[in-house]
Structures are given as C-alpha cells and as structure tokens.
Image 1 (cartoon, rainbow, N blue to C red):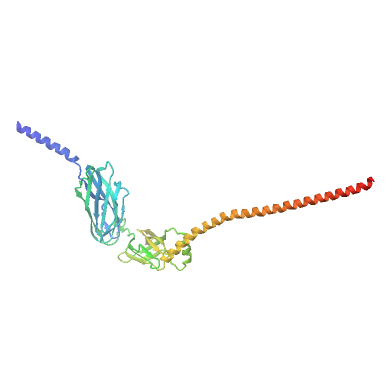
Image 2 (image 1 turned 120 degrees about the vertical axis):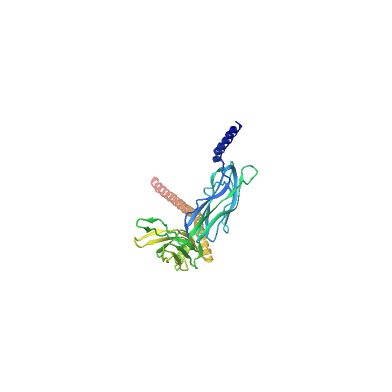
Length: 365
C-alpha cells in the first residue's frame, strides 16, 4: 500500500515538472539577430544587437561589441528602434569595438527580444568574421542595480572573395549580372589634387560612374565658379572592369568644388541599359584662399542689400524734405507776386478814381 502511494506521488511530481518546464523564463542575455546568410567582398549587411529578459524587469544595459576590423568595416550605427530611452554612452565605432550604455525608464523591459541598436557592416576581405560581445551587463530594475546577465552571444559568417553575383539562376540557366559596388574612394579631397574611386562589379563589363553635385551653392561660391573657367567639373565616365570585376577611376586635377553623389551603373551593351549599384558621397573642397574669398563675397552679398536699403530709407525723407522746401519757396514767390499784383491794382484804381474826380469837377463848374 505504501509502495503504491509513493509511486503515485512520484508520478504527480513528474507530471507537474512537465507542466512547469515550458513556462520557465529565459535567462537575461545579449545576442545578435538578422545574421547574414552569404557575404561577398564589398557587400553591406545589418546586425541587430538585442537583449532578452523574460524573468526580470531590467532598466539598464552596458557592453561592448567586438568585430574583426581587418575583415569587416562598421559603416554606421542606428538607434531608431531602440528600447533604450536615455543613452549615457552612445554606441560609437572605435578601433574594432562599439561600446554602449543606456537606461530604460520605469517600469523597465521584460520580454523575449528588444532591439538595443543596429550596426551596418561592409565586408572588406575574404575570411571568417566573428562578431561578439567582449563585455556586458544587464541591470535589474530592483533598486540595487543587480547584474543579472547570464549569456553574451556571438555570430560568425564567411566572407567570400569577389563580388556578389546574385547566385539565383534564371530560366535558361542565365546568371544575373553583378551590380557594381564602390569599395574604396577619396571621401574628401582638395580640388587641386583630384580624387579616386575603386570598386567591384561584373567581370569584363563596362561600368559608368555618374557624378552629381548636390551641394547648395552660396552667392560667393556661384561667383567664384563663374570666374574659375579652367576648373573641371566631375561628369559621367566609363571604365572597364578587369577579369575579376575590379574597376578604378582617377579624376583629373583642378576640380570644381562641391558635394558629389557618385553612383556606379552596370552598362549592359546587349539591351543598351544601365543598372545602378551602390554609390557613395564625395567632398571636393577649395583652397583656404578661395574659401576666404567666398566668405568675403558672401559678407558683401549680405551687406550690399542692407546698405542699399539704409540709403533708400535715408534718401526718401531727405528728398521729401528738399521737395517741401522748394515747394514752400515757390509758394512764397507766388504769394509775393500776388501781393505785388494786388498793390498794383490798388494803385491803378486810385489813379482811375482821381481821373474820374478831375473830370467831374470841371463839368460841375
């Protein structure tokens, strides 16, 4: 009887353990989501830095993401969809690391996944890249700042040499051509030195690099551009890719200053079409002397209208005053003429009266 009772107790405990196990909360951890499936040199991809804490409310996170700078380059960091309300240290790219620290306001966060920030990488060299957390802490919202982090995640992926050829096959086993990607360029250069653009695309194909100046020109810059007749403006150029798909363009010197969007296009000579690839933005700046001259012209362009307005404001009252004086003088002259004419008429009337009296006197006698 006792044995049967023990068997029943053990069975109930076992069933309870099966019921409870699925609802046990996951331990707080950092991990990466959206890992890339396949990467080629020059490709860009985004990793999401996420946190989970299903067992406790958390109100602060801190840590550092490490990556092999020789294989991949961190292009940018986005906090658009972050769960963090207040950053005490913004995620910043520093020598193969991205440190971060932030606070989640009350009541904190509890859940399976929350985005901390996103990182956009660019593949630089073939190899196996591992992105991981070199350090980290997840603090509980318990008033004590208890670190409850249990796991620091990581992700690895292979970078293949050469361009991404969009390996999907089309009907007839035709391969989609690789769109060109700019992989190296002069981000900022002096107008007298020129610039260069390098990239990868379809092997043995033509690549057109289109340059478009998107800068807003000031008055001084426009005047300088008119005077600099010998300056060369960046325009569309055609370059030939080598058998590995690499292409390069070196511009002439003495360029027109501006902010240029450089976009590579794959030129398909079969159907006479152009397909855009991944472009970049370039800055061409003038010399210090030209910049100073531009500032001077801008100041003059601002002062001349102000001085002209002040002259007009002063001239109108002055001119009105002068006109009033002239009119007043003319009115005085007219009054004087009228007075003189009146006096003359009075004298003539007196003379006529005297003559009339003289004529009446003899007749009466």
